Structures are given as structure tokens and as C-alpha cells.
Image (cartoon, rainbow over all chains, first blue to last red; front, side, top):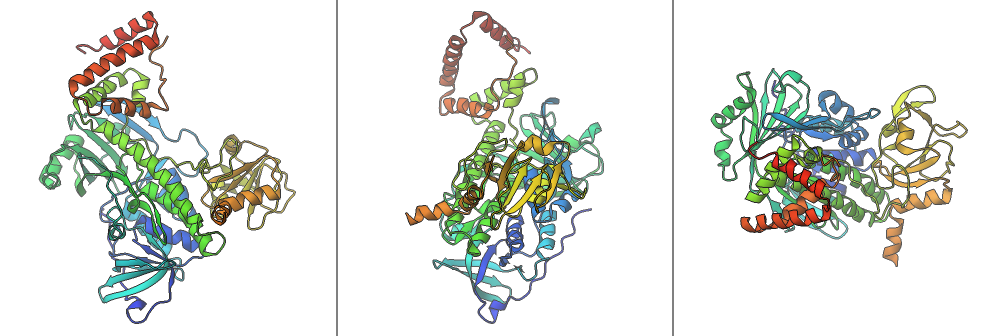
Length: 543
Length: 65
């Protein structure tokens, strides 16, 4: 069954008839990034208005691979479990050269995590679940479909937006303008911001097909299969993924000078698919021919206008670093913007969103450019090295690891950046938390993830001092229950193996470690938390 | 000596990228000359004749494969 698109209702906005009170946050774009942003802020009590020129979820499956870290963030936004339930879980990738498998990798070889390495789920489902979740905050999230932002002006401490609707134009004001308006961001264009990076000439054909039989053959296990020079598509590359509802994603590299429009035509696509799946019956669900760029904005924060997701950075799709990178942007910005709007942090904290996520985005661009370069040699010598690497890979493990069909999205480390207090520990400051199964004192099962994310939390593993600090949640793991905060024990030792013992970790609301302690005092913990909230940034500005 | 051990990870992509960069913009003939120089420099760095002979045989093994 194909996806049943149900248009969202357009409601005439109040601004058409009378000026609206200034909004705290205007979010432009109701894709996965804009919706996640609104939910993250709402969970912290911050209202927002979300403006989208359209009124349906993503047409076509588009982003399908959601990484473990993304699912952990979606868990905090209360859509993770629903995504996991619907999605196709996978963790193994196989690379083929010709018809022969040369290298496979297991992305989550270890047990003890709530979420798997990856699920595949069509973007339209993700958007549908996010809209449902956003509707749970009728007083905090004002979703406005068919409200197209056509202009904006930054007035210093607020932004004025001009909005076009089926009933005419109106304008609103907002303290912050979050541009989640995608790779072709009209906001970015209006501001004339440079967005010219590496453009790859190669074209790729994406086809989603619906079929009952599995193209994965006898193994029939959802995995990521990548071919260099497959028998069914000689001289090029191919990628196969499984999605829910018996939908399979096929991605085929085309000639540089291929006619994109002709290649997307059914009579051209069908024989290409038949070459892969044979005579098994299938139906075309969605087809697209695309080229891509790898580029990011120089600055993600322009005073009161903040770029999040594809509007700030785009990458090639190999490595699943686009959508997943964008969700990490939301995770990073959400708690900072809320802290600033509540008056708990200096405005300079927002700048650290740029510092931290620009770094993450540069890492994504580096990895995805390298994968693309490997897949699409540009000169005879590059082609020669690639061909010989593939030949060696059948026999030599070092050559197998050189094969690059996309290094899959990993959470980015914020080590050494301004908000983190340096320290040495099994999981060092800057790293995203590692999940672990826990048992509560009452015997209930839970995950470290669920207990830590969402607010500043001090977690003590084993016997370690746990000072009281204003505004800080405390959790004890494998400790004697002598104090009045929640206690847990680790299940199968996963927590202790990942974090060590007799030490405490301070986590930011986005689950990143920002300090570690062996014998913390209230003063030390307070100082580290203040630093994570930008106290030092304030001093630097004052100085 | 086991020349099939992987000694490049986890920096394998950095290496491959640097190798491609070294060839960037060169006409094909100059690229081959660069490769020849590189083999000789690496041979000197390895320095052990037995090892080098094994590597030469391993590479030669693929001819007419």
C-alpha cells in the first residue's frame, strides 16, 4: 500500500485581521527539522509559531536512514519508540565488487542499547509522527500550513516576517527566527549568503519500489547493500535499502552527462530495476534523479536569524549525514535557545550552537565528500587506484577498509570546545552519552538515556560524592541508597563498562558529557554547569 | 612479516584522500611518474629486501588475473 497523504488544514491566521503579539520564536519550515525544533522548545515551555508554505508531509520517501543518535534524540521528543516500531531495523552493511561480497560491517556489535544502529523509515512517516506529537502542545506550538514566508527583516532584538496565505498577506514579529527551510532556503537567498561549495557532476537515480518478494535474495534480512561495478549496472555503483510497507530503496549512479529527465521516465527506470530484481513483480512508488553539493554556511547564527538543518549545510547522501546532522542541530540549539529565552543564560550561548554544529557539519562534509570521491573517480589515475583497491579488497583486509561506500553517521564529539570542562574519563567531556540498561530500586527496567536527557543531570557511578546544586538533577547508579535522589543498578554491567566506576558525570540537556569528576564538590559541579550555560562567555564579553 | 595486516585504519580515508590530492591536476604520464617515485621512496623506507620481494610478488600475482 502506498502512503495515504492527508493534507493538513489551513486556518486563517489571526495576523490577517489584527496585529499579533510578538512571538518568542518563529520556525520557518515544517519538515522534520522545523517540527523537531518546535517540539524541543515546547517541552521546555517555550512557545513557537511554525510556518510552512505547504500542507502535506514529504512527497516521496526522501530521507530514510535514521541513526541511533537521532533515535535517541527522538526518544527525548517522544517519537523515538513509534519510529522504532514502524521502522526497519538494520545494523549490517555489505559491500560487493561485481557479484562477490568483499566487506561487511556491523555498526552495533554490542548489546545494551535501547535503539539500534539504524532504522529505515520514510520521511513522510517521520513528519506525520512529529506533527502528531506537536499537536500535543496546542498552547505552545502554533502550526500554520500554507503560510509562506516571503520576507524578513532583522530589527536587532526581533525579526519581522512577511507571510503570504490563500487569504492574503500579513506580518508577525518574533524574538528569534529559526530557518528550517531546507537546502534551497529562501531565507538564505534573501540574505544573499554565500552557499557555493563542491558540486558533484555525477547524477544518481533514486527509485522506491514496492514488492512482496525481497530483493535481498535468500538471506531476506534488512541490511545496507552497496555494489561497486555490479553485474546488473556495469561500471557504476548501486545501493539497496529496505523500508517499511515492502518498499525498497534503490540508488543507481548514472553517467555524468545523462539526461536527468529522460532517466526518470518509467520506460527507462523499469528495465534498470528489472536488471536487479529479475521478473519478481514490483510497482514504482517514487523516482527522482539528483545531483548533490557538499557545502555549509560560514555562520549558522546571524544575530536573531539562526540556520538549522539543510538550510545551513548540505552533504551527499552516502553516509546518512543530512537528516541525522540536522536533528543533532536541533538537539544542540533547543536547550540553549530555551535557556536564553528564560533568562538563564547569556545570549552568547547561542553562538556556541554555531561553534559546535559547524564543526559537526564540517566533519559530515569531509566524510561524505570522501565517500563520493571514492565512488566517482574523476581522472584515469583515480579510477586506476579505485579499481586496484577493489581487486586487492578480495584478499587483503587493509584494502577492504579503504573501500568507501559512505562512512555512516556517528554522533559528533564536542571535545575541547568552550562549554566543556576538560577532563579524563572513559567517556570524555564533549562526547554524546552512551546508553545503558538500568534497573530501578523498585525493580523496574529503564535506560540511562531516559533518565539523563532533557535537563542538566549529575550521574554518579559507584561510590562518589553527589553534591546538591541548584537546578541540577542527580541520579545514583550502583550506589548505596543513602540520599533522596533516584537510584539504579546497571544491567549486565553495560553502564560500568561504558562509564567506569567511582566517578560522576555531568550531562547537558542534549545528553553530551560536559564535565567528569572523581571527588566533586558543590563548587566544582556548579562551576562546570555555569560554564556549560555560557558563564565564561559572559566574562569574556565583559572583559 | 604479514603484509595483509591492516595498518592504515582508522586513518585509511585520510591516507586515500592525501594520495588522491598528490595526483590532483597532473597529466596522466606525470601521475605514473609520481607513482614510480612513490614506490621507490616507500621501498627505501621499508628497507628490507625480503619484505620488498614478497610485496612485489603479491602485486605481480594479479597480472592476467
